[in-house]
Image 1 (cartoon, one colour):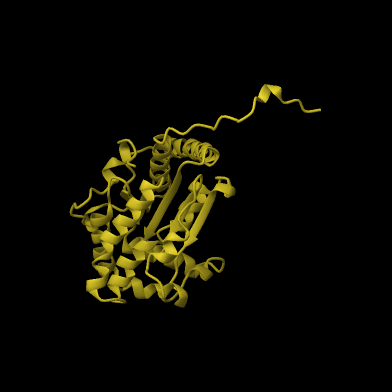
Image 2: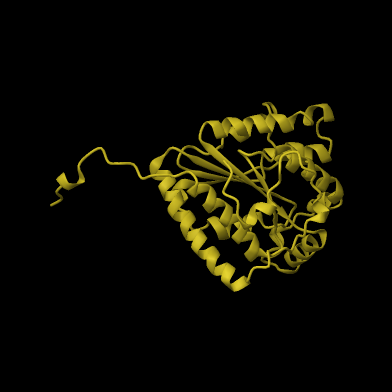
Length: 272
């Protein structure tokens, strides 16, 4: 389900459109005032908390949020800052690393479907099924004749979820190689953050152009009316958080949710 058009609509990818990530600024702030925007974001996050509680109570809908990005773009930061206040009872985080031997013995969507959100809850994918048209493509982990079919598989899978009441929104956190370098250096220079750095991340950094082409294909082929992709300029965290929170609030409000009516007369209840 697509949110209402708003300031963030220009960051939404249209299905089949040509995507050139190099032409999209990574430090865009929408010409918004930082202080006023941060105050507005606080209110949006409070609204997300209210809407999540309503969704949990009604139990008819669920929400899947997909976060994808190059390393150090801020996926964990988004989860912490935008969704941190949400009641943990109705929020789940699923992170996808390299598949295990058991997962490799199944189709590539098997491990994804098993953690899709249940009714009344929000699930955030920190990386996702899109790894199977990103890293798999860039590093030739399976032949092209296999991964090239997966865009349509993914669209059909997401359509299934939508048909069954799971609404989907996907965010690509867009950063530059220069920004990633600064983030990596900060991690290396801070003893409290060195654990976040993995030397293997430099292997993916060396393949930046190839990953950008893979992202461009996934964004173009898999941004649909029922499961849109947004390219989120992620270098100004306050704007990144505001854009994401705005999309989420509008989407949840569009569901026209209602608290369920009790199956008893509350006025008849007397508690000594």
